[in-house]
Length: 77
Image (tube, rainbow, N blue to C red; front, top):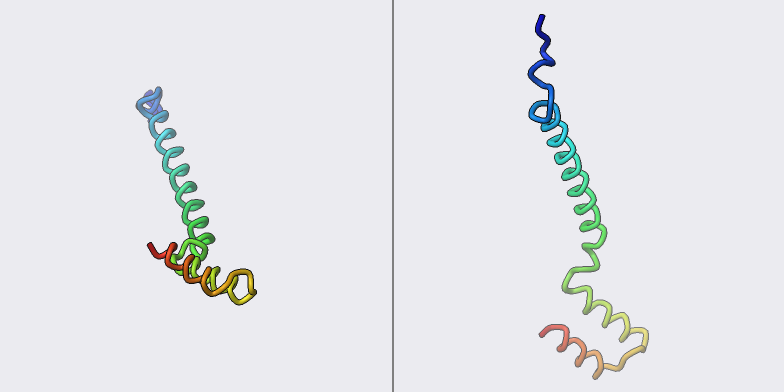
């Protein structure tokens, strides 16, 4: 009597399917973590955030207006 297991024995059947499953889930988890980190850090990587930091430093008196203009021009290059 033949089982349906007869054709899935060895690396060609079940082993390849299991390997594909691990690759699929690993890739899915990697992409999920990558996109979550991107969303969390997205606010910090915007191009305008550097200018905002300079504006805050100017408002606190940490830098002068001349330093602000010089740093702003350096960042915009």
